[in-house]
Image (cartoon, rainbow over all chains, first blue to last red; front, side, top):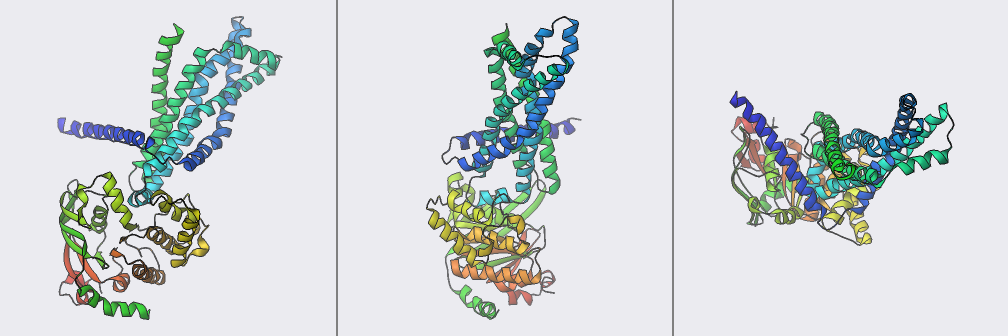
Length: 258
Length: 260
């Protein structure tokens, strides 16, 4: 039994060690000169701009559905006037950041994992390394920074479109002016709602980029490993998003909501 | 064709002359887990020499050249390039060494998100840190012209054939003017005509850039065209050494089997 358990632990320890080494490699190269600005901008476009439509549509529908489902409950409590506030707080604090991050994990982390995995299989990363260039600086640093920068922006877009979706849902059944609705939404959101939400989106962005790069960069040789890298990147990034979300919510509850 | 044959006739004379050893490998061993890939590799390569490493697939030929550029660390033995021990090098020293060594991968390993021009500019701007765009353009066009693919300068790698990809890969490697070239099965997967063209191109580029080369192959036509000297690898060891003609007449059945 003990003989069977040791390789599992060894594997786990090896993987943890690899991740720490990869992370330290990222930070070492982050502060090294010669930042790849053009690749960073390209990645921001690829990662951020090309996800606008998906994130926007999903957030809009989420806002709409949330409003439609909240309405009967709030009517039952005679608190329909609380609908904009409830919508705004739930979207800004939790639904906007987490839904955006999960969508980005599915689209971006898998994309990065598959791209770098395929580069590994076709020896492009080896070619870069063996030529004396720095693949971590060119491929990893730019992608991780691009996701860290773009996921908060995508979340902001998702929040706004989610609220617009909520406004549309309210106006299906009743009439509320846009000015009143958005005034109520904005009035109900405070610094304590925005700051923790914004901070956690930065972590989400980092997780998505880092895990996508790690899985792709360390994939095995062979076409099957490209799919495995993409799949593993989505699963691991999604799991870490929820773990970090739970931690940030606990910390922000202790700091702001008591 | 005529030039190639002349080269084959004269290369034994050139290899006979005493020259500086640029790669010295002694007692190299490498294992992956319990699998021993390199048992005991000994090899000296002199400046300007073309050494062909012949062997069946999976015998550790590629592992040996990956050790030379520090992609893999040997378990045991000495490996010096230009007199410096590769296994003792730090990251900076390894980077400096890699600039002097060109490595042509089996599939060309072109960066598929970049055009041919961007592929060739990459080592110039990232490795040699060139800033002058005119100089970059001139070098890119010169080396692409050398491999006969100037017309493909703005194409994407996905638009190129296998042979063209290898030519561009060769151009990208040669653009930094390396002193040593390592070729990992340069003609694998190509038709006989393109294989011959690539082999002749390797020879032409070797003359033009005066490189020292190690060519991993099991393509006998490529070996015949390019080799000054050949070594045959079997089960992680070099089992025979000599010119193409010498090995062709070898008494060893294993060696002769490559020529049949």
